[in-house]
Length: 113
Length: 113
Image (cartoon, rainbow over all chains, first blue to last red; front, side):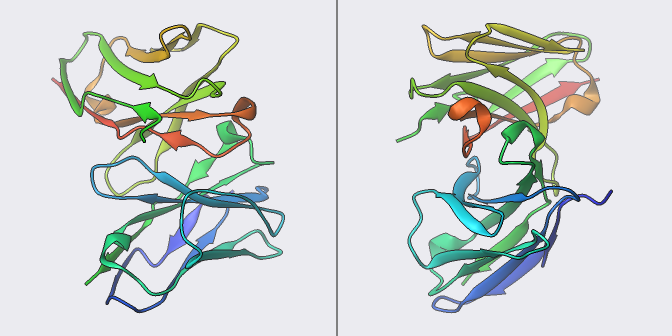
């Protein structure tokens, strides 16, 4: 049974660019949630995908978008990067969106210059 | 508007003693609460949870207490071990844990040998 994996581990971009982050969910999990963790803060919910459909969204602008694929892996896309987008991006997979079964990946650290 | 607050950024405890981590919340709709532990370079790991119909839940050395009238919960670790040194996040959810998590900003626990 493989855990949640994320790629890349680190990334440096410049303001205005676009970025795609990837997440492979835990085997058997059909729900993926994405969180942004700024330095010194707790993770903030971006959105959740359940069976390839968006199933809830936090207070993030539309330039944050996502996809979930038939194998339940997921992508987070961020357009028009801003300096404040620098953060650790965490992906978590769970079974039927039940939080207690949620497993987090190690995250992708994004730095926007 | 922080709906989940952890007012102590750090806590230092001697090995073998009790560690008490505190969390306050403002949203009375929250009905499910979780604690996560996070080591550097890893994603948060689920530790223990409690639903609003209970006031206490135990799992080995870890006990979570919920005081709904005060909108306060705490995590007790007894006895504390050096391996418990990590950042601890309190999180809350609605719909009995089936919705996105709202996290506090975390408390860094250091257990001194």
